[in-house]
Length: 417
Ligand SMILES: *Cc1c(COP(=O)(O)O)cnc(C)c1O
Image (cartoon, rainbow, N blue to C red; front, side, top):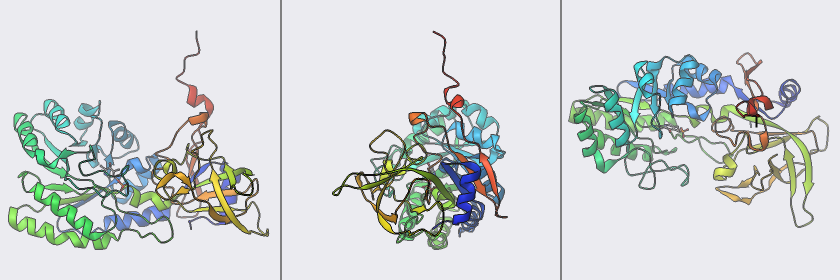
């Protein structure tokens, strides 16, 4: 299931302890190559949506491969600059107008206004400047309501019927709307991407200065058996003709951008945890393996009923390794901290057929590169942040984030009375 064998897992545990995030350089580079080879009609830029996994070493690795950055907040943009990314390679698309917007744009960071109010704020700071606008094209395709980022139920972007407001604000501040952006989480089906691209192109046709069109991220990745990963070649090829037709009709060869997060990192990551306890709730109940990870490192099952591959790895080889129905529980005092919910239903339990665990075995969670370390119930129950390790292309382990200590959690608290 993953890039780690049993021997490596045991070495990692001995050297770095648990819970531990492990990332695989070869997998990261392979997915980066696929993204950079996305078929396109004219110019092309691929951005890494860094919120998926914002650790500096990962940003640096992907940036060195040629990926630019999509930042979801002013802080993320600053973090990418700290990690060594050239500011001109960063674009901010944020729900919250960055408080440091002036300084970021002065350094060369690009801004993609996600609302009319944001466009206005940008216009006041930078009259006459070029800017991009995020449009909600009226269609979404996230896998559930919590990941749906387009359509009338989503607050992201400027509603497609409000382009007149964009034009008014742009002319008030002499802004040049040269970029347009839609990110609706289109999934893996080339036909859905084509539909989204057509909608976006029809909107771009009404914004005559637009020369750069981003179709966002949201390329599906198979984590579990039976799921399929988006075929970027097929999706890219499905879009080319529409860009060519647009060029003929409007005299603009649009620069295409995509900005995947999940696709680049999801299957390049794993979480290793220790089995601390095994309990059961009687004949009609369940068997639980309690681990030293949970919603503090891995919140996706809780949020979405997300399904990730899970394995039990015995502390040593040669045992019986018979399988049982098993639930994997987290270390938080929170009944919802269970990592084996039913698919799409965080409230329901769905035991997995896994090796019968004993205390001291390892639970490995796969597909844990995207939105795990970056999206967690950090510090709940005062658990410090886990360490992160990269398995390099020369098969060595390299620490890329140290394990946090309690003092770092409480450092801003004031102890005087
Ligand atoms: C989160 C996000 C992405 C990446 O989405 P994935 O589903 O991880 O590919 C791209 N663009 C924007 C604006 C985002 O907010």
